[in-house]
Image (cartoon, rainbow, N blue to C red):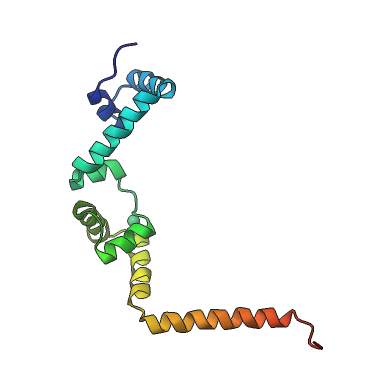
Length: 139
Ligand SMILES: [Zn+2]
């Protein structure tokens, strides 16, 4: 079997191979753990090196960030370029689903700690109440 190059692995991740090449590579991946390790290394390399919005756009295919990622976005703890991507997704693409999710997360993050505590107590009280309902009242 001919050697699979690093460039081919990159092309595979970019969906830039012909179908025949892709089929050959996938077959090679299935039968070779060392090759799978090389693919993982290439993916990590891409993650580290390709953080331009264009690259992220291609990689993420404009899919929505997860709720966790949106939360990290609000806290501004995402990698700078991913932060920019989420910003782009929210402001330029104006994805309604993510905007709604973001508004919800913003409310949660703004809630003062005392209110969270209060709510926890309420939840605790109501479950304590539920537990009493099941008890025999004569004891
Ligand atoms: Zn979205």
